[in-house]
Length: 283
Image: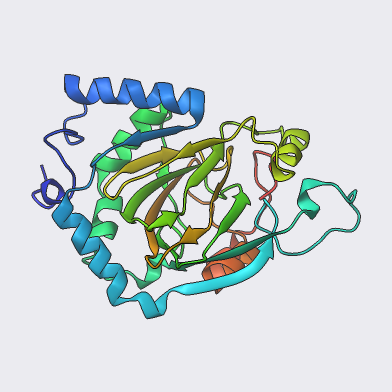
């Protein structure tokens, strides 16, 4: 077992290096139940306090490299309107966004978070919790394990992710607000379910669940199929998350438009791999 991993993950409570242990099998069973029913599973105090401090320092050290963005987007992460659609179509509802990312290509080679993301132990554990194999680390060099930064007054409106599965690691909690809200399994491959999406965007909260993460908690999340948002950050403390991502297609990356809007630049790989998605969902 890798010595560095035991300094990052609370292996006493969550021995992810020993996936056949009864302790982990029970945890996987619970996570899979929650993911199947709610598209979301949470593991408290997954990251050890010392490692959490290192991750926070990593981000703070490079905070001036964070790409911040203030713009209106729709739930599919596009900022361009499509007048060919009906006026009340969810693709034509735009919401204010103010957040930023320390892109994955900014991370130093010895980064704590980068190391954790690249361990097979974490990949195999997440795959088992999802009950899906194989899954792959995201090939997108900007987005695969980015830090998400929300300053006071920051907000992330309702949206779907480009990648199928996302981990959320709370690094620093805001004083108030910054609550994660989500609508489990609201769409599926081949079924956009625009009517239900529209209801949520128009204020219907009957499908909305909330998750209040604490520093060190790990969330496993089916972000491509679950509409979600983060409420406005209030107070004087920024909200820091790391969002390592996993995909079903090892070739797939963000579209050029998404990469430009969210991560501030487009690389050749985004243009070369800009093909229609096989799941038929808006991206």
